[in-house]
Image (cartoon, rainbow, N blue to C red; front, side):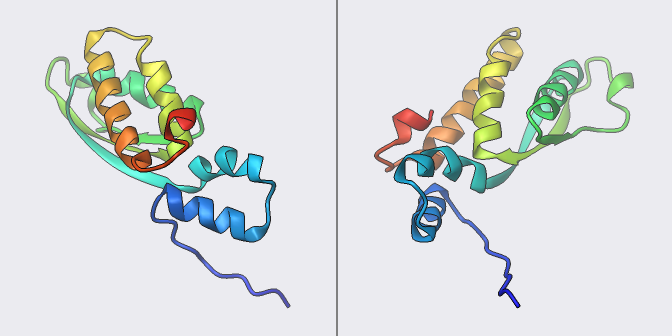
Length: 129
């Protein structure tokens, strides 16, 4: 019988160590580590149209975004959204969001800054981002 257990991966360095300890090819560590760290981010004061765009972009990457059920009726009333995904999905989301208009580009920049903090202190941070 195998010994299955749940592991909480707290940050990118923890992910790298666990993957390295498995004995993976060192080249694969930088590919897999961002996929092992999951984050849930609350973003407030989001325009409803932007919330829908962000949700669609994140869904296309395999992540998720919780938006208000009445988002289609809100017009200009801002809302909160909950963005859920791995560091890799969030990084890819930044690239998608930068293709949109200025309000969404502002959110992309905030997300990019968050990701830089997540990778801070890492020798390979620049390569990952």
